[in-house]
Image (cartoon, rainbow, N blue to C red; front, side, top):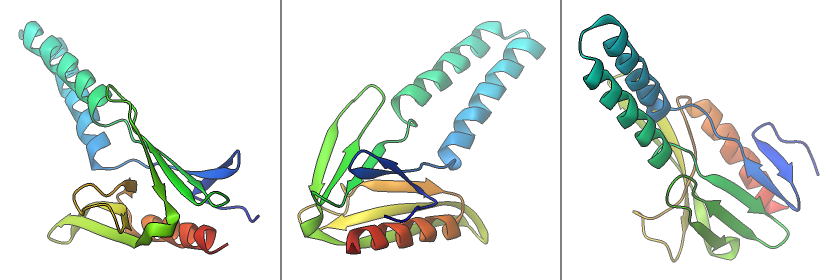
Length: 151
């Protein structure tokens, strides 16, 4: 098989690389704000609470899922990490297509999300494959995944 830029070979399938997005920047900003509050003000308790809150938020929500494509068995496995460790397996025979969703404020892009659509999964519960600031990066991921599914 050919080498991919955004997919990493693992076992019989490929794992999709994850990229920094707006959520990650927000969590880092919360950590920095809490450290600044602890160091440069007299609100030590508030800074500690903010730091604990931001670390908890990181553990619970912003650890990206692990996405594994297996073209041989035609399965997509999404393993959620963090406190709720769940694994979802989707059959690629029910695959409908990819969808890029870009969120922006005016002309400033805030993020681009790559979703995969399946026939038996509602629009609200569709899996997020990857996310990034750049629509170009997400389009490259789509192209590589389409090449992988076609083979």
